[in-house]
Length: 152
Image (cartoon, rainbow, N blue to C red; front, side):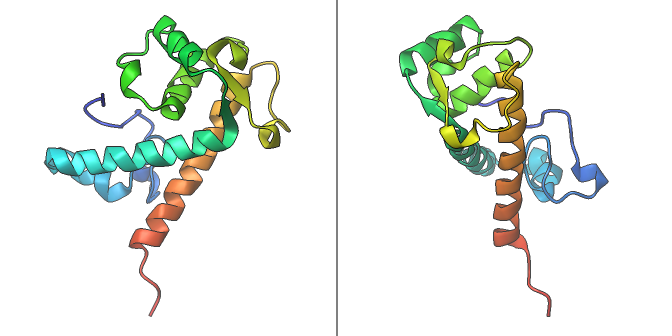
């Protein structure tokens, strides 16, 4: 299901970030990616999908999974059947961000808490921006919880 690398071509670790704002991997994972064994890469992919899926779940309601999967196929998302619904919803939003769309068309609804402040002219793009910010914050918190050493 996964591409060779999570890289999306927007690497902020070159500017000193410990978590990439593009792919949300930790800096050491990016540096060591090509040397990782397949099982090490899989662990990284699983964490990224879990954090991203949990983030999407906070923003979106899954109203109709068959409609979501049909929308994904119509948008030509490769291996759509391998994604859990919330990671698939993210991929659908990525494809829809360039054109206005109703979320209900693809079996999704907006969580009531997140309706405020969303650009209603282009819900997919506005949502994707907010989801990406939250995904980054959660990845950063995970990094700090797992790798930061307290000052001595």
